[in-house]
Length: 226
Ligand SMILES: NC(=O)C1=CN([C@@H]2O[C@H](COP(=O)(O)OP(=O)(O)OC[C@H]3O[C@@H](n4cnc5c(N)ncnc54)[C@H](OP(=O)(O)O)[C@@H]3O)[C@@H](O)[C@H]2O)C=CC1
Ligand SMILES: Nc1nc2c(c(=O)[nH]1)N=C([C@H](O)[C@@H](O)CO)CN2
Picture 1: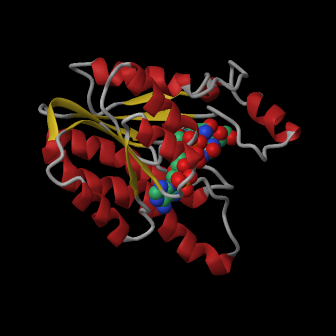
Picture 2: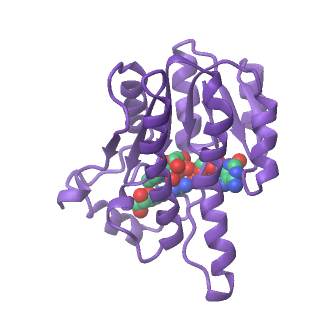
């Protein structure tokens, strides 16, 4: 199974849960850190990949050419605020590159290597259905990824199922202050920071299904009804 952007937080948690179940994992990271050496020593294949360029995406596809895959989880993401106008064009391209172009090209290259009955999972975002005034390009790119879910489900089914998981708050970032945390927690009915295992539960459901495809599982604490 391939998980992109899995050197920290949600992706790393998914790697650890899959390892607990004895499933062989290939993970990608952009920036090396100690956990990469730990995972390598534990038998995880760790591949450096930066999707900021088409060459970086192609390099991962080349590195995995011929590798049988039980599933692909497109988790890599960069959550960036809207920049000043003079940086907007580059920002938009960068958001589309990592959240939409990389999953698109990697699916085109690697889907034939996904085993019969396998899965592709796109990690999108709850805000795809609402928009965001502070992360306009990020949400637009995640919306593109949501659309890719439908198209690849049509193209690859019934051999391979393709679904999305749309989280709202899962885990805060280290630099989130108390005011931001309180404001964010108040946005959902459940009002908690659930942690990465909520995403794992959704991943496990989709991996075990034999019927669900072209669908998005919302892991959002009831934010949509708040
Ligand atoms: N955390 C949350 O509350 C929420 C998360 N999500 C989604 O869930 C998923 C996991 O979230 P989270 O764990 O917080 O993600 P992170 O913000 O921790 O990002 C995951 C990884 O993406 C990698 N990445 C970023 N840009 C690139 C790039 N250009 N090429 C390759 N890798 C890249 C980073 O690699 P490196 O560190 O090695 O540079 C990073 O470790 C994401 O898709 C996110 O959008 C959605 C809603 C809420
Ligand atoms: N790549 C990331 N995407 C998102 C993150 C994150 O930390 N990294 N965080 C969020 C927020 O938690 C948001 O859901 C609530 O404020 C969204 N996407």
